[in-house]
Length: 98
Image (cartoon, rainbow, N blue to C red; front, top):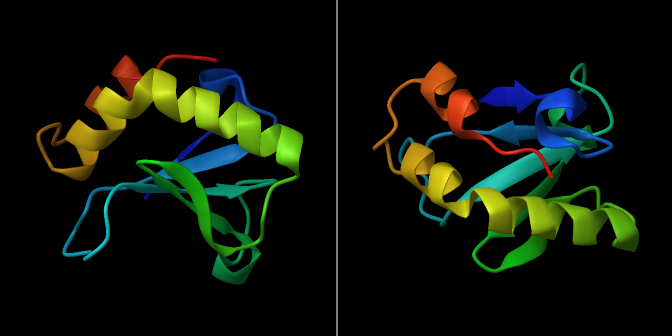
């Protein structure tokens, strides 16, 4: 799981992206107020469509920002999730700021 800081995403929280790695669900991202966080302090959001799935929930205005960011980056997030983008640094190089 790779953590993306606010400077890379343009969001007021940290976004964590990962590859599928055997998961049975579709593309998801996790979010947190900081990079130093326990798993139970994270929120999980499905990307297609963007919706809260588990853990801590963002305030409504931040959920709208996350949704806009996911829409802007859905191609990269999906290709990274599916393993078409193999390396994290390649995915990070394609992420667009909100």
